[in-house]
Length: 281
Image 1 (cartoon, rainbow, N blue to C red):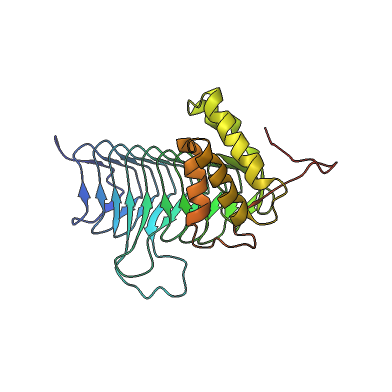
Image 2: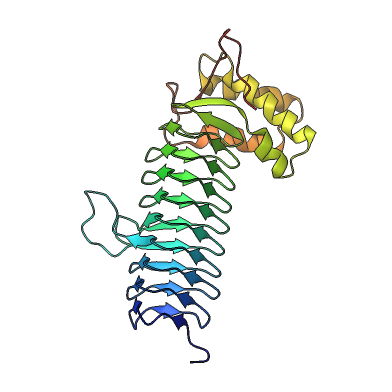
């Protein structure tokens, strides 16, 4: 029928789901009551959209994706919670994104993100615009991921951990410590340099990159205490006229972390075989 969503007759779409007129729904897909899907979106075969899920415009959900299911959280007691997704995201085969745990809470996905096969976003995560998660990457509950961060294959982020803007987590890496913006995470809770490729792709010029690299060297090489290193470096920059916007963002990330302390809540820099600092790519 003209003006109606194009729903395969083998799909099961609850009459109380709100689908824009040009939405496509593939065979054997289930869409529960209370789901909303924005214009231009395409929902592939054998996917499942649970109650409380809201998708924006032009999202592409491939086959076998589950969005908005109950959180894998033992404290969940069936409270009404949600999953809110922005525009132009891609969810590939086997991707799972769970809704929030506490009543009224939500898991949030921004716009223009790419979730490859078998990725998982747990309850109450907040994923910003332009994030890429490669196949097998996993986010624990309450993780915050900054804009245009990249999580490589089978990388794991522990619950209540932050990944900063334009950071990259290498394949099979695992972090339970915050990964600051612009940096490369590797191994277990380790930083191994500045994400030069990502910064260049984001339009950073040499001056901006040089400022970030200086901050990285100053803060992470040979520091006895990251908090004191941050305060000392901030004072030095203030005497020089103040930090660049990017460096100010890095310093704020270090200062504002809820888990920030003198132990190791921020991933630490790695060293090369001869003990010299590893500056990454």
